[in-house]
Image 1 (cartoon, one colour):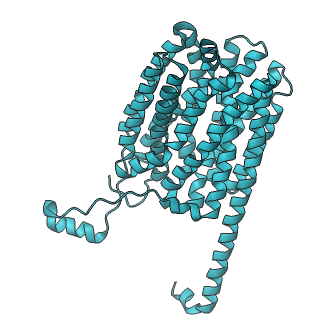
Image 2: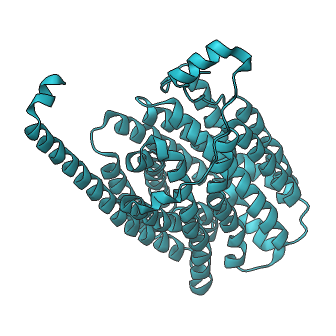
Image 3: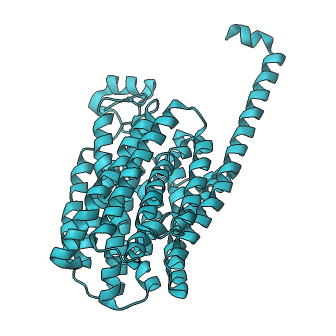
Length: 434
């Protein structure tokens, strides 16, 4: 498929639907892994902080693998890397079901599942952003909502699987479901780079005898780190990730500690996912309307998310928790809807893949530190509330860096506008020609 600009529709909507399923079979599985937490902890008779390393390793590999996923995508295609991700994810779950030891879970669920999720998630995001410009926020919002829709379905489904087949049997079935990532990857038709007029003429004249140009050398652009706005956005990513993944891991144990029976925690996760879906769709629509700048909107929702998490464990009645979980899910969805597409505002579309890779790479530090730190606090205080306090504090701190990024970008735009006005004054004839 040759295209000189993103089609903003057409086959792009097939890409969006494929990405929808990819988000569901990767991020939604990771989000609901908290349902396995107590089962694994009880099975191996270990501390909370030790068990949390299973999820923490998965989150870490999901982020650390991003540069490799980007390089493989540039070298081959999104389609190939997504299929590879599907095979890795399914294999990780199937091997984890052998139940050899806790370190075995670190390797299979942590390393293999984490890399598999990364190899599917990163190229899917890349494809959606490449196929759309005008409708990019809406397209990304629809694609990312797959995580919410599948999370709503997976919460009671995973709970039922664990009760019926044990956590080991549940992993086998989930691994089988994740093989469908390969089908989604097969539907991802890459956009071909447009040919230059000279190359196009050459191909027409020489036909099959035309000499193929040498393959482009694929290099990951660490030089983007020279941009101060990207550095501050990476700091936002680290602090946000430290708090971002804690609630999904500790919501179920927190609910159980309050005496709620087995299926109520799963219902809480489903309601949170439903609110998450509403947040993604509404925030995507607001971003597409361009009522406020993306980074301004991101600052507001991240700050509010942190405040909600600080308040969530204060009132421990069932209905109060449900209200705060709904607010948490809604604001979480708002953040997810715009925090990746905002990278385009910082490094432009040409640098998006590399910018996303750097963003995910450094965000892994927060993902590695957050859940174990929260688990350590829970072990020390014997209270799951401390995990939510840590999460809220990290998210509020991260919002400061988004403010700095927005100010730097606005200052650069003012300088560019001033330079343009100066050039117009110095060359009045140039404006007439234009």
